[in-house]
Length: 216
Image (cartoon, rainbow, N blue to C red):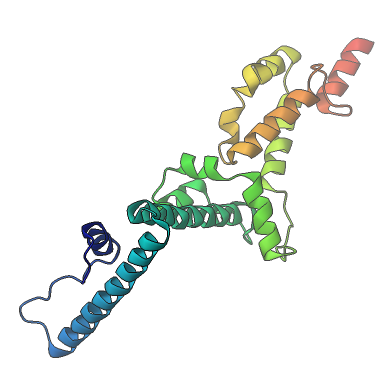
């Protein structure tokens, strides 16, 4: 019998009893329900005993301890979900899963999925799964985005390119909607650094045009 009302309430919250039986349930289900009920009462008694022992030994608040433990579980699950997101975007064989698909699976907006993936998660997945057996026959999404934007910037005049790169690449960011947040920042930073002088890359189509114009 649990004497402490706080502990009694906590075990009721942490180990809820199974739902009530319907009036006309078959005997087999009734037996299974009874077994589940008995197991829950036993688990409640054991948990209450552990809480009472902890309270007597260290004086810790059982409610705060329960919240702390629940938070550890939630944080661990959230970390695991981020690793799964990172795997689905950066390591899975074949085409990466879209942010929309991942968001629906997680019950989250696609933008939340995108912003939650960090480079540390991508690196952690790489360590967990070992050397990637994935056939890397194509560029990564980040590399492809970088190549596409370089091609775009090389194909416009200097003033247009300057405007595109202004305000931290604000006009280019919608074109990077398929990348996670850190990858977007890397691409923008590299482009701004690469085009600091607003000169086209050597050998590009625009470079040849400018060279021909200067020689004319």
